[in-house]
Amino acid sequence: MATVVVAAIVVCIASASIGNVLHFQMKFRLVGAGLPVKWFMMPLDDFRMWRTYMNEAHARQWPVWPFYVYRVSLVLFAISGIFVVFNIDKLSALLRSRFTH
Image 1 (cartoon, rainbow, N blue to C red):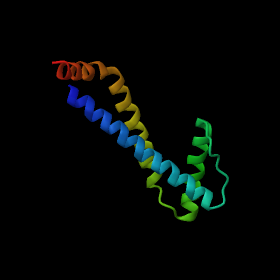
Image 2: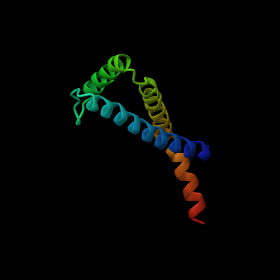
Image 3: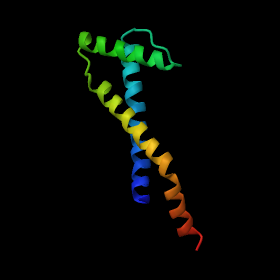
């Protein structure tokens, strides 16, 4: 079970990294096109940026895959993060048993 928790931690970190890169890729495309984008965003501003990106992607022939991969990475981040939070005691018990002897 501890191996699964470690794998979930890796998925959590990787999906957060991928999501962060794709978020800023979409943001920089919008800024480069001269469209106003907030830098310190609340969740509603994030939804507005997604909507603007998808509208502009079709008009400017930008790829739409960053939006979809970003959304998948957010879901993976949330699921793996919740899994880690609820199973961290199993990982800590394994680490304690290995390093206390």
